View 1 (cartoon, helix red, strand yellow):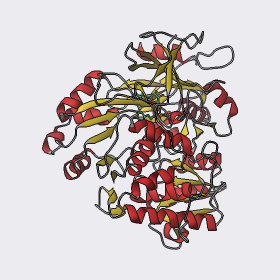
View 2 (spheres, protein in one colour):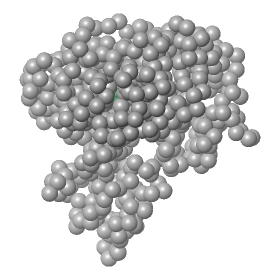
View 3 (tube, rainbow, N blue to C red):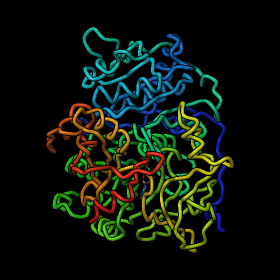
View 4 (cartoon, rainbow, N blue to C red):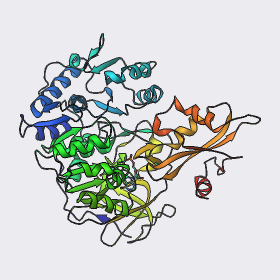
Amino acid sequence: MTVYESPKPDIDIPAISITEALFQGLDMDPERVVVIDGPSGREMTAGTLKSDIRKLAGGLSERGYGKGTVTALMAPNIPEYVTVFHGVAYAGGTVTTINPTYTAYEVQKQLKDAGAKLLIVPEMFLPTAKEAAQGTSVELIAVIGGAEGETSLTDLMGTAQEAQTPVDLETDILVLPYSSGTTGMPKGVMLSHRNLVANVAQCSAFFTPKPGEKTIAFLPFFHIYGMTVLMNQYLSLGAALVTMPRFDLELFLKLVADHKPKMLYIVPPVALGLAKHPLVDQFDTSSVERVMCGAAPLGGELGDLCGKRLNAVMTQGYGMTELSPVSHAVPIDGPRSGSSGLTVPNCLSKVVDPETLEEKGPNEEGELWVKGPNVMLGYLNNAQATRETITEDGWLRTGDLAIIDEDGYMFVRERVKELIKFKGFQVAPAELEAELVGHDGIQDAAVLGKPDPEAGEVPVGFIVKAQGVELTEDEVKAHLKGRLSSYKQLAEVRFVDEIPKSASGKILRRLLKDKLDG
Ligand code: AYL
């Protein structure tokens, strides 16, 4: 019967929009370079960024694409990502962030679900964007950098907007990233300005970058980790980002040597590289004092190895898209191997028996529940999933089994929800299953995650063939190839006679998991 508060004092969460928070950082010094494109070295100053955001917000509002409009942003980490995200936010609109490596089919599903009217992409992704936009509510595609015969991002800019378009900070939807949550298909996670402003402040209690400090931003801004912890936290505190459109260990190490970050933000597969890859010895990483790893389980041993190799304090954070995302983090002055951290300020956490809902004591295992100003508004157009995830008194059920020790340190033990994590990316079994049963030769299918030393987990398909059908593993795999992006592909196929199900038709994943392990 224990509810855990943060050991750190609560903080005042300013009643401002996320872009007003950003401008506090940018206004510290307009001449300061705040975003650098890693591969090319192209620089953007705080002054230019602010001015571009205000012009874009003005242009969007003039065209009627401000408040009430969902804009889809499908881009890797490039300096203009910040301009678009905040241009939309300052105009009072909603951004849905799309993984640029998605197939046209996946992009189309998100565009439709989110009801996006405007789609903004770099030229490289224009063909996918055009294909995806067909038959959706998208009215206009704008190209970052421009393209022959297309509306460019610059064309969208208008007269600089003087002030934030009024929004309800607590109830208007600022951003719609997608997450499958504890069960089912990916869903739009409705996050408000307050959710993001709160989480930036909550994170800062544990890992505050100083003005002018830089870090290397390869974690994608379209995912909540990069969005809050890097883009919004760093820039709103006057710190700077070196963006990488995709991860490449050698370039990453070179950027570390050149830009001398004190803190690195990573995911477990990168921790593996940093701990073991010979390339690491060829670069100067001596500026790094601290590494923060999150988004998937990191073994204590691997974490220690990574910290030792870089001669830095290795810490973890824990979070969920639905929590904006960070609810737990390990402080630099109290590292603990293998722990995902202490509760962040203004937040409560507890461990609950998922069946009886009884609250557990220290070191007793149960489902982790979290409450705070960073808990999402709910899932877009899905009141039922919202009700199943957030209790009436505001606790978010994480779907992770954990313990909290007597000092308040949380340790994730196991993921009990369906979600598979491939290199920190979400793979929703239900999405793969829906595609698989769409194949004529497949009568039924279930997808589970199998532990993998490099990716963390890989999806494995259990397949029941339709009667009298010949079907090979390759044919099953090929069915998902053009439809779903590379990280959602099946690593393995197992043909079975039936998928075990409960009386209500739910897949009994536990039973299949035993098969996987056995
Ligand atoms: P989503 N250890 C184990 N599992 C984790 C951890 C961790 N440290 N962090 C996240 N997960 C798993 O929405 C867990 O199953 O957000 C959780 O429910 O893509 C799920 O990932 C959520 O996946 C940080 C720390 C960001 C974490 C994040 C998480 C963003 C991932 C910033 O500092």
